[in-house]
Length: 309
Ligand code: PSU
Ligand code: MN
Image (cartoon, rainbow, N blue to C red; front, side, top):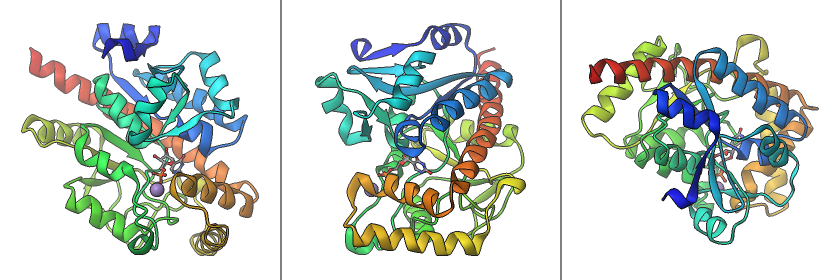
């Protein structure tokens, strides 16, 4: 295992000291946002996590090594390079063995976070069951990973490029708790609410950390979704987003976009159709998730220490 994994200096130190660490994904950098906003956002998110007393570990595969924590140069490289493979679970072996570069999705980042013993992971949105999945069978590997990897994923809920109802059904089948952070309604990424309810509302980072501890203490494998709504002032208009997403889905269908290209294509289209406003919202919600995720990581690390005493 050691020969495949490399820790940054900052993360190595944090592990030694038992500090709280927060995992961050890299598909959002290389396939989810354009340059230079992608690199700037990644840096700002890392700084938010530091300001909360935790240590950020952005995860990617570079030259066939799983990197837990990236240097400024590596972040910049990921943000600009064009040959970086979008890496989900199935892509990892090829990228490692052929010494290529991979930007890890939620699924792949969860795998790497678990290898590195990092229980909390912050991102924007998770993949899910796509609309029309009963025909295409397009169900993100993120959901399977949530079923098996012991990592809490702090996100802004599920985007309505997905079938949110089916995504919740899938997570229910797999036994993945979907928590609303100070909300009863499942947030829909660009908007604070959706027509769907979360399983449980949590009021605080403490409450969330206690739930994680209970789940893993009794050996219930798998992740937890912590759905944190986009800040009010950054949220987008629900009916406008619905029609834009319909248009993006129609274009994807007409152009025959499928498989791993689907999510990046749809995100790009939505950005184009909102004249960049969706990107602004995306940036705001990731930062907001960084605040909450860092708080949860700090509380969870403390619970572990109480136990050890
Ligand atoms: N949703 C976003 N931005 C993203 C992604 C999802 O708003 O960048 C990325 C994440 O890395 C997620 C991946 O894990 O897309 C899901 O891709 P797929 O649907 O192909 O599994
Ligand atoms: Mn897919």
